[in-house]
Length: 312
Length: 250
Image (spheres, rainbow over the protein chains, first blue to last red):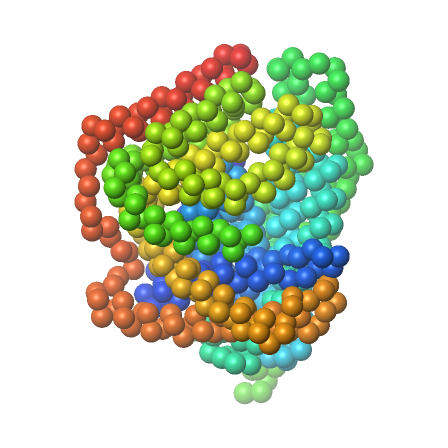
């Protein structure tokens, strides 16, 4: 399932980029992928002697834009899986969905929206939005991973994955902390690059020519960003649904089909009302925030258009 | 952790020479990719502990038959082991000993098979094999370029790390260590800026040599009897493992 979703999304991305991708960008994306791969080796301290390392999805997306970032992160993951046996091919679909689709999209979406809302061009505002975006990309990818683990645990009746009661708090708690480190480093890197070679950002900043009417709104960065975020939720919400409704059926079916003993009924515990309620509440809340941000940014563009025309 | 990977990867770079001389290295890349992937997918779907052990045994036999230097395979496997052990350990904690062990065996079987593929194939043959299997050209071109520059940049990072250490930087204590984070993020930023400058020069150099978006493989190989036999053997193993599994769960 994961790999199908991933292949569909990646195929769409490849189709979309085929026309717009500049020949000149290819070595740049390649060497940035290599750069991100290597930057993942920079360990940062978390405390108590443990260290974490950069994931770099948000950084990549902020530097080159979401489409190229998705392709680049895919390349990084393929090399990790193929060359070094990391992660493996079987988990590859879901892994790539989390780290190469959800993380850069979420990072870029949050960054662009925050940048727009906090006020464009202000240095401190940009750094804050970079930080929040980096944290969000790590946290959302972890959400997806935890939900996937829980779903695969439920569907396979305990052969694969980890129970929801364990995986969700563990993954989210750990990655909420990791995300802080990622946010600090990403802020530092962006501030450094901004200071040393601002032309790095040109691709991300370069916007298409203004089009009349609604097309302008649809093409503006904040709306695209909001769509990116909504898209991430569209990917995440089915997982929660599967987890809350289908999961239970799948679990019961597996148990009855496999003729497992009564003792396995303990596995049904994660699907009590409390957990389901939590999942739905969480998804609903995030969806609400995304829609609210979308509405706000559309309003903002209109207001800016008005002031611009008044200025003329 | 990943440092170790790239170190072993560097060793594998020298291995490319060796890979061509072994019979496994001479097989057609497409046959190898299809066969190994079929096996890995089948192995990942197994749940019965006995069958999982069979899959692990098959992977080990393949590794032995491939005549690749066992030391390199072992080193690469050890580099991946902590991830496997962590996953299996969490399964072991929540689903019991037997499932933990079969999780370890299952993931090991997949990883070993992939490592045989990766170390036993010339890296560029592997990517052009993927291209000839109709993986989109953008992806394979990027894979080739990225792989080429990975080692270059990791050496650069190593030099920067040495320079950092020579100036008394020890890695910092916790998330609250502002100075450490400033140093680390400047390192990563400098790496990116340098690599961007390099990317522009590379593009010009590539353009001079007639580069286009889709680098087509230039070495044309044919699938011979041995290649087909290897692929069919692996596919047969994969299919029989899956069929055995189906019979256990009607």
